Image (cartoon, rainbow, N blue to C red; front, side):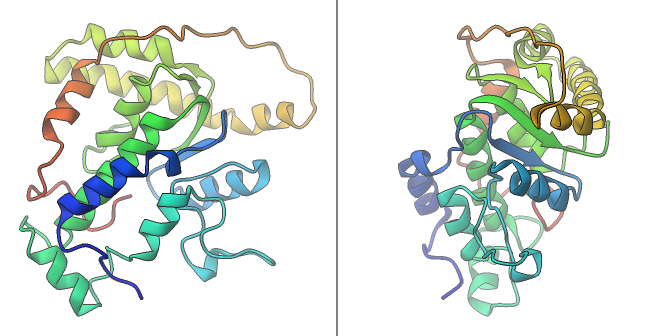
Length: 248
């Protein structure tokens, strides 16, 4: 039966914390996406045996022999099955509305924000991101939660072939100034998009074509950056509207 399994967002938060080991992908197999690039991310996961957070979300995305929930983290598939965004179900609509906010998806957004952030915190090795736009869309979960968390995750070595450690240094150098933070993130997004544009070449290399050896990046532990501190300060707030109805 679809619909919220808990009466409060806080109960979901507790479950997410208990389920961190179910919000992981094998090393070099974590895939993220934004800006309606879900199909491209899913195709990549399908061809490389990697994982997106929620994998195949509906039957219409299945190819022959596949099923809903495939190419997903265990917890992502479980949460997707709750259909927290589906306000056509009166039970879900009531659940979303009782948590306030300026629209009818505030509770669903809060739960998916924490889930998405946790997946980024658990990523390890090389990460693939599918994004079409070079500018930051602050309404998107990827830019609010996943990208800052990936950048501050010392277990991640590179994002779309770009050094994670270098991104972290640049973001940390921006300090707590919002304008400088956005400027740094915009530059990082351009680099990630450049890596996105060269993905076909790199994927061809992974399938056996010749390539140059990539230089290892710094894996040293770092103190939480300004964006990481900001995100942790916001955790637990469930009533503020964060953007449009769908999380992506």
